[in-house]
Length: 245
Image (cartoon, rainbow, N blue to C red; front, top):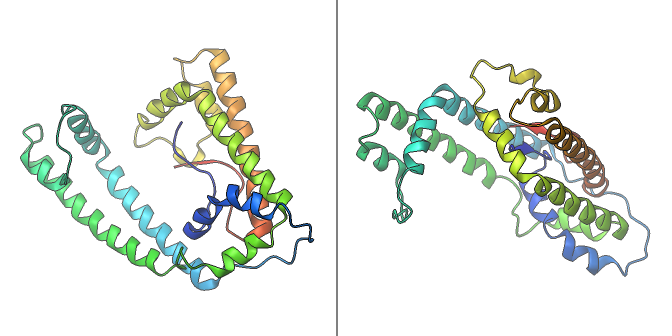
């Protein structure tokens, strides 16, 4: 299935949510009414996430400007034998050593890698400024006060989401391939998932109907999960709807 941004949540929030299954049983015996929501978003955190998003956009732009060349490099790597020793794999060194690229292509990719490494360093520095994932009293306090019914619903919806994604995984893989083969000048700003699926000639009408039905259900689950997360953690920045990366 094509990569999608399911929820625009903070990294720390996402990590806490992974523990919901355990937390649900732990708090199930608590019958006390849900206490006021603990607001976790701060102006400082919002600013950091905006910077992180900006760095991610820069990284994406670097890949996009030489997309065909990066795809060529992927093909070269995929052609390596199964027993190739990827231990301590150095992408830059591999590029320099391969005979499948011209010198000009190598220089272009190496320049991109240098920029990407710099952006990775920026990203790490920004993430380091976010709350420590091992010590998040505000997140944990809000979770402890959450209604067990809300936690149960979150767990149920997350499991359903996974099931829907896996139900037609083979078809979504085909959609993936078609999506990433789109030309660079494709109008991604007005991308519509259902319309894109309808346009794929290699799918039968029944397969298209099945995928669109799955996508619509995933969108519904996504929207409800956003509401539930916000009810626990306040304004998480979660937005309803599944957006293609």
